[in-house]
Image (cartoon, rainbow, N blue to C red; front, side, top):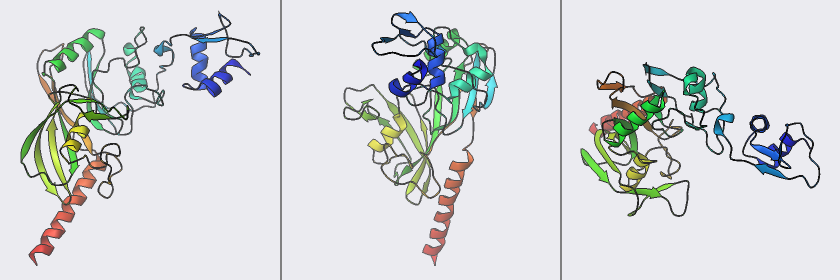
Length: 299
């Protein structure tokens, strides 16, 4: 077989075209030597896969949408659509936001081979809304320090199952990797500190619409915390284990508001984006159902 065909069929991880790029970058050795994708393999040949330089497979993709809300010399604030993975990971080597960012902002390409150039924080694939991208290594460090110091404030809109009786509340329990499923997070006494502050915006048939802030930013924090208090996020297939309201095709989480201090100007700014159409329509449907139920109850 050709070497590139063998790698894509039996080793996996990358497509045939990606393996070609890795071969050209010297990440695969055949019998101790660099070789070409078209080289034919023979019985007894020895392959060595060297540590892969991720930038070798990060090809800019101008077809990936990048909705820019703000841009200066070192900072970009974007509105991420749902369904878009932020950076390459196993099973999502292509078609990520990073590929789109590299096409829009070539200066983000990092010769060290980072798989998430410029990404200061990420959103889950099915979460929409505001994200920060830094154009320089220095800006990444500055913004990450702001985040660690609590100077970057993020607010989300969520629809959660059941009725939350309190008008507002705080969920302050640590989060760590689930011991039985490494793809999930869980509340754990030995986890990292995690704090969620929320207030109720509306109570709807079977659900509560909330605004939540994150002084900390752990993986899946909102989804884990609201499941912990018995109100999983609507449409969450990982933690919710129940169907969402009619018309909901993903988890109802939207990164609505972001407050930060751009490194260049030094003046605090707040950005906000409204609910995307798919989530807004679900909310309107539930509000309409509540209106009908109210009229019936008054008869």
